[in-house]
Image 1: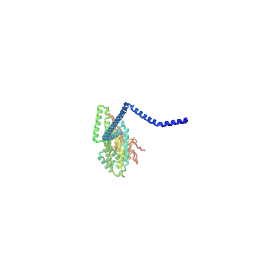
Image 2 (image 1 turned 180 degrees about the horizontal axis):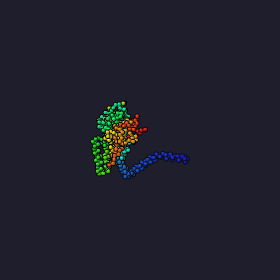
Image 3 (image 1 turned 90 degrees about the vertical axis):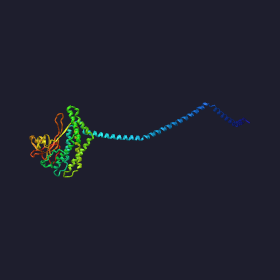
Image 4 (image 1 turned 135 degrees about the vertical axis):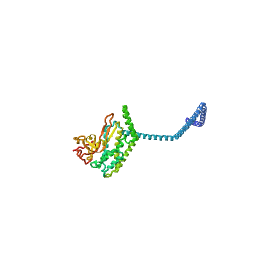
Length: 419
């Protein structure tokens, strides 16, 4: 056997011996593991046990906190449910208060607006009063002249109306004095009646629409303040009367009184015109609505501004006493706006320059509109703002004005000269 064969035999012998070595190695490994397990100390085993106990305690604490949180949440839910009706009640009260506050704000704004409309921003000027009064007069003139012609004599009905409405008439009751009869001057007569009625409730009282009792009360208080001023020379008292009137105008009582008075004026005039026979039908609802909007409302505004002004005003109808035997003379032209019944035009001084002041011009028929004055203070003279307008039957031999086919404007400032 060669050397290679000997080596091969030895390798085979080693492979046969390997199973016995594996069993021995496995036993050795088990023995080592047991020795390592036995080598673990008691302290290590205690630490692991403590860690397990700590985890259990932490878990238990978390569970308790979770239950407590759930309890608190449930409690809050019950409280919220119990107080829900209280919250709704409070919300309803808040809504009611907001609504009430809105109503108060609207009333305040309305009150302020009425004060601004009726109270003078500064001293009420004579020019403003004249302009407002002239517009009212001109609008009334147009309103009346737009009416149809009256079919039959209405003088008796007109005279009776003054008595029924408790108005002071400034009309001649002698129908023969009218050159062509009362029908020929129906516009002037109707203007006089309408203005007398609205003047009674708006201009001839301390405040438009005021009741007689309130008028007497405020008038007495104002006179007392003026008396106190004159006796003690208190300058700060001078505005007390106007401030008192402004306070009344700002009240709901004033607005109610104005509304009632305007309603009664419309009712009285509507009843008066109902009995008159016109040549054609008139839409009186529309006609009275126009009167209310274009005449009564501006008249209320002017009358209220005059009432609230520190100045005092006076209306003067003069009456027949200022015209002895109802004769109108040349000197009257300096103080009155005089119109001729035939021509319906104004009589101008320029046409009568050569005549004496005492020269009779004609017979007084109607005082259509009164004069307006601002009362003087501290003994000064009254200031005339506007002249009264009178209608006369002019003498046939006077060079007055030629007859006009169309009735001119009632504006007293427009003078038609003789060509």
